Length: 195
Image 1 (cartoon, rainbow, N blue to C red):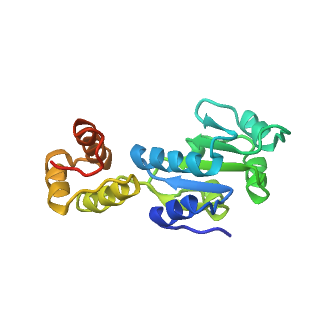
Image 2: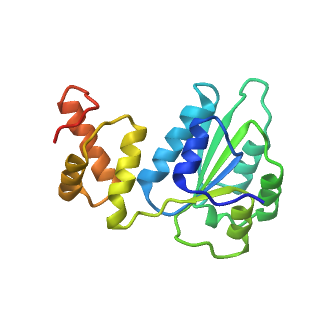
Image 3: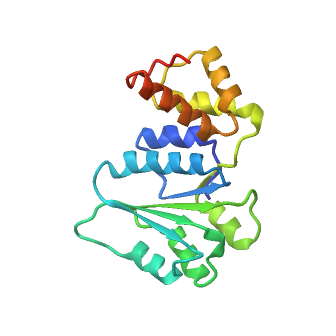
């Protein structure tokens, strides 16, 4: 049985090269999903292997299963990003079987855009993976999230400057981070931000 963990704990483990074969992101914040994917690619693949994307509202379950079970002599590591996992209707038993015994050269990242887990299938996925919440944060939490992401990206910004940026652009984490990155570029790609 796997477990749920805070987003920051999982990112820390990924950066420390402690990988789980299966991650389950629950929530619809596209910025947090994409940041997680980039961190996983950077640490797990480390410029070898490849990433493959699936969306279960478009792609076949059989194609996903074939790729997951495929063994290659040339590719050592692979990341599979699977969106709309709740739409996987056929071969659920086979898919859950893979989760019980995953290929150690694969890292499977499952994304469910919903806010909660409904149904036996999603519950089984959660029990077989390390899961975390990637729902859009409440307005009062944007400051904490922005500070955390900016620290990971190596930006140095004062509390007052971050507050001013959030007040001006703070409708989402993505907006705040995007503005800080633009300011950095305008200041000559400087990680010390002056707003």
